[in-house]
Image 1: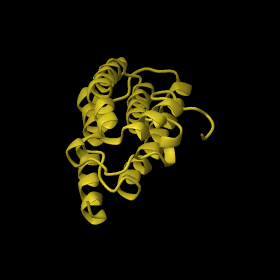
Image 2: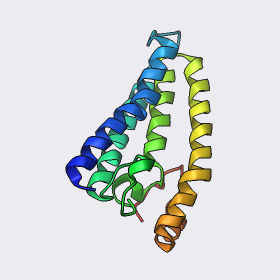
Image 3: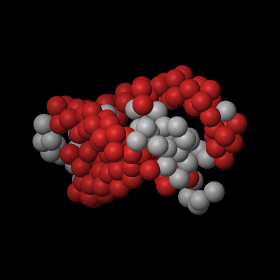
Image 4: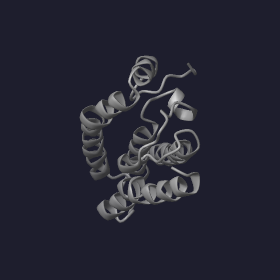
Amino acid sequence: MRKPVAATVTSLFFVLGPGLVAGVAPWLITGWHFGPTWPPLRVLGGLMVVAGAVVIVPAFVRFVVEGLGTPMPAAAPSRLVVGGFYRYVRNPMYVAVELAIVGQALLLGRLSLLWYAALVGAVTWLFVRFYEEPTLRRTFGQEYEDYRRAVPGWIPRLRRG
């Protein structure tokens, strides 16, 4: 896939994927109204939201630059993406979305967002386990298996491999 096309599709997928899941849905659930919470939790929540954004944006860009494709399954990359945050965790986009949702829950003091984060996490894990990982195995074979053995799926390692 040509880079300008991949960049356009990736940008649209960013809005329709994480934008809806970590932005629009939390807003629909809470109206972004603040509930009662301890002020240090608000600060921690805000930092988590920022951290999620700091991770997810370059992770999406990586698919265009390194993978020569998009993160969207229908326009998957032609190369396995293993650089950037993918050196530390195999699923940085999903981790970043969870981080942003939990961060919003803490920032807003809204338990409903923690329940939503749990639902998103469960659905994401099922998708990765039963669709994404088997697809990556079929597509990239031993290269993916080596990567899978070297890099954790969900909890980032602290040093580069």
